[in-house]
Each structure stands twice: as C-alpha cells, then as structure tokens.
Length: 303
Image 1 (cartoon, rainbow, N blue to C red):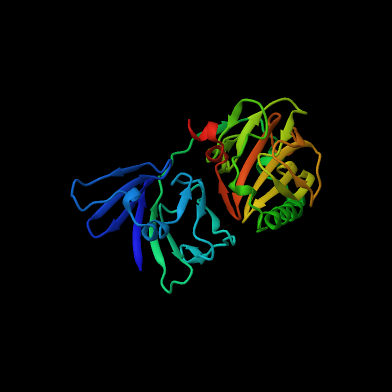
Image 2: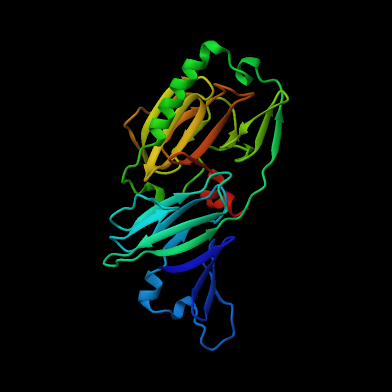
C-alpha cells in the first residue's frame, strides 16, 4: 500500500528521498530538501500525480473537503466507503470535534491495491456564549412536547440522509442572507446559566422578513413551518450527502421536491423556535456531520 501524509493543513508526499509539502488550503508547492534527487510535484510523472487525490478545502475540524480522483476510482474514509460520482468527484467532512488523524484510502481503476494517506487536522478553539432571557420551556422542554421533538428530529435526520448524484456541492457558496454575523459555528452556548450543546450554524441577524436565498443549487428535502426548537425549518440537498439547513424562518417559499437555483429566494428571516431575536441560523451538513458554513464561503474562510 502506498502511503503519504497531510499534516495540519499541509500535504506531505513521501517516496524514497522525496519529501514535498503542499499547502492544503491553496495547494502551493515548495521543495523542503536541497538534495539533488528531490523533485517538486510539478516534476513528477503524470502517473505519480494521478495517484494523489485532489482535495479542495481546509484540513481542520468543521471543514468540508471536495475531492477528485480519476473516473472509476473508489475511496474510503477511516475504512468506510464513500459515495463517488462517475466523474471521480467525491466529498468528505469533519465534525466540530473530529479526531485529528483521519485515514483516507483510494483505489484507482485497474489497480488491485489501495493507496493510503493520513490526514492530520488542525484542532480548533471555540467560543463560549452566555445567553439570558430564553423561555424556561426551551431550556428544559416539558414532557408533553418530547414526542414532538422526537418527530422533528426524525424528519431532519431523514432529510439529511439524502445522497443524490447532484454536483451542486462543487460550486462556490454564497451567503444566503445579508446582515451582521451574530453567532458562529462551534461555540458553546449557555442558556440562563445552563450549558447546552454546541452551536452548529452561522447566525446572520436582520429584521423579520429579510430575504433568504439559496447559497448554491439544490433540491428541497424538508420544508416545515414550525418545529419545536428550530421553528420554520428548510433543508436543501446539494449532492453526495451535502445539505444546507435554514432555521427560525418566518415564511418558506418552496416545498419538498422543488429544485432551487443559487441566489433564488427560498424563505424569509424570522424569530421562530428557540431564539432571543430575529436571525437566520444557516448550517452545512455532510450526512450526520455538522460542518462550518464560514469555511465554504470564500469571503469568510479567508478571514
């Protein structure tokens, strides 16, 4: 099995005396050693280069990475087979507290053995936010609403489990609303002094009725006007398990099964569910993994 390592946002390729480092954020190339036998990636043969999957994204907790292999390849993450398009495009994501060492394997068409690469993720630090004034029923919901919450969660899980062969996830994301950022991914929220689960979205503040648009193309898999915690809730599938969730909406302009285009109005900002004021909570998912929306928007990921 051929092995290489990408560490803390950088990529290492090892073959004998070869040691080359590539920035995983921008894939810039630089030669580490002065040995005359050391080659840059630009000098490698075409066969050597195609053995390495292209990865577009940041090697850190919370990141969405889009990958590319030759058509007909297969790919695994930590031993689990990933869905891959006929074109060789695939996607993977790392949750808020993902293990820092991830094992990526792939098999090229016509080959009998797998290649392997160890991905070393950057560990992130998260903010703690203290929020007062939340209604007691939302901090500790009464028993009579537990069945409703379970039903909400089942519908959300089913929508996020969708794995279509759309290619929208390869597009550049735009922000779905205009307004100041009022909450960030990964932050630990404390409601009325009681620590709760981390926040998994990007909050954009604004008045009720502010337009919400599709960040990229997709198909609506859930449109619910009133869930217990999230209020008006909308989920859009972008392909291969990548989806966007929009919550606390005052109104929803689309229905399940609708195809939407980037920039199309899909809903309006609201203050429904567990909130202290009107805003959009936008989330990026890869199946069950909750990812950081700020990392998929160029203007925010560069900050």
